[in-house]
Amino acid sequence: MGTISASEVYCLIGEAHERGERVVVATVAHTRGSTPQRRGAKMLFFESGATAGTVGGGCIEAEVWAEAREALRTGESRLHKFSLTAEAASEEGMVCGGVMEIFIDAWQPHNAALI
Amino acid sequence: MNSSEDETSDSLLSEKIKRALMEGAVAALVTLVEGKANVGAKILCEETGALSGSFGDEKLDEAVTNRAQKFLLARVDAATYKVEEFAPQLDVWSGARVLFERLEPEPRIVVCGAGHVGASLARLAHAVGYRVTLIDDRGDFVRHELFPEDIELIAATNWSEALRANLGTGRGVAVAVVTRGHNEDEECMKAVLAVNPDYVGMIGSKRRTNIVLERLREEGFDENVLREVRAPVGLDIGAVTPEEVALAILAEIVALRRNGSGAPLSAWRRA
Image (cartoon, rainbow over all chains, first blue to last red; front, side, top):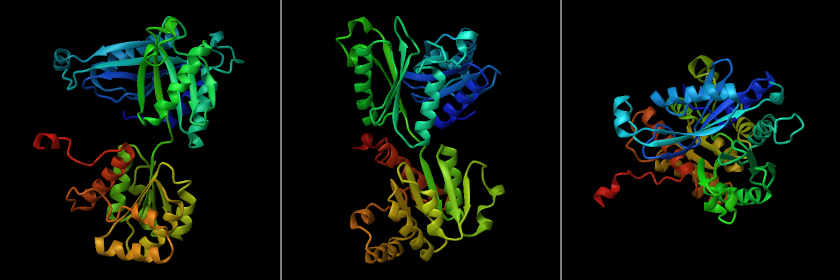
């Protein structure tokens, strides 16, 4: 699963909204230290379970996935902090050791008020 | 917030962003990511000054749009600031945080010539995330089964026409001229320099590229434009194979776009 371009992101959001579906967009808002993705990197989560893009692999993606599922359900947007401390990173077999703040944001379709 | 008449709805905003990107516009998308209220609210600030959306406080909107213009000048992809960092007078928003994201059309590379170097450059640039157009006048060299499907392949009957049709305004576009011969290179260079894209590179030795540049000078091309041409093309990484040459060219294109020096990051150790 690779990175996606800005035009792909907003095309995919548009397509999901046409289907009347909510989309959750996870964006790397802030990083400190060594992290697996740049600021601004995005991962999209769809109601079908499909995803696009990446905010960095490994254990972070699993945690982001769980928060994104929750946001798909509730429609609430929130900033989450994920620590990739050296100990945690080595336990998880990850090479990075920084902090990532990821904004998990629910983009509502037009008729969201009716859901 | 989510009624269908609401001009700031997520659907309308994503449509606006999509349209701006298609038109080649540069914009900042600003999102309130932390705060006591309105988390997730967005403002789209276009470089032209056009605005959509609101954080529900005119003063904050104004401070954010001013900051957005500064952010766009800095050429970074994304950054998060506390409101007090750019608008300390708005103490009701103290502690709130705002994410600025740069929106711009995907960078493009147009490769003239699908020989060993051109084909390698097209594949490599595609892997790095550039939108790639590969042009050759030999249809056999730009067959679809040879390349990943989202590389745009053009079998040109006429180089100049193919380039005119594919360079657009030249903004955000890098062009590598790596055709099979110097006559073809020269024909391409004339069409490319007429548009003057962000990056123009031409393959060949110092001597051979000088001959082409001299001819272009005689044709009346502007000296300042000719001086910017990267010929011989690429960074000096000692490239030998076509794939290595492609890497040297792509490295130069990335360095130009990201404002890199091309020097080793470790040089300070030996300074």
